[in-house]
Image (cartoon, rainbow, N blue to C red; front, top):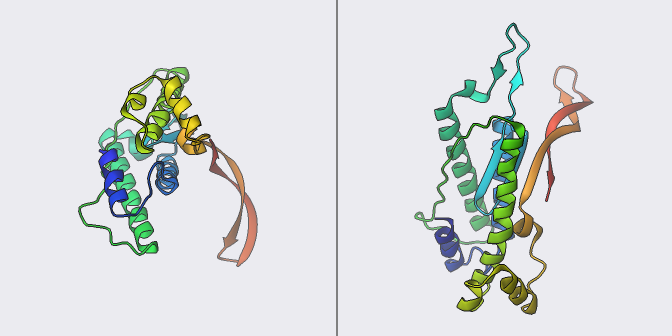
Length: 213
């Protein structure tokens, strides 16, 4: 029901017509939080969807069994994942409304659900990201036409006609996150860390998420 939520946000003046960079940035923030919480290797988000891939890694003990976040308890993943994104999204939404001097009605609340899937191979899992990216490429044009006031015959037309209408309306190019979504990949970064015992600042290398649109 994300379309209904954004419609209500437009009605109270929190976001403008068409694509909202603010909502897009909130989704990117939620995606990175999920990736950090579940030790994800790759994450992708567009619109109100996000996908986190967690590659199993072996523990350094006899048997080399796979180690999963929250001991691999699926119900924990589902409940924690959906509750964390719901909480962070609504908190960010509330802060956005406060910064703009808008009172956010109590009945405007985002709700997210969560699903878990298991794949037999890395290739099979990565195909899910490719499908999400394809879904983004189709839906971004559809949404842009729908929310920018395109005639109904354009909204119901094929992909090429939608693009042509957007071009003639001078609405291209679309925002990068709207057009392509955002992908996060775990890597290594250099950070400054304060050592409390010695009150010294040292440079360390730690795993972090990098983004590419």
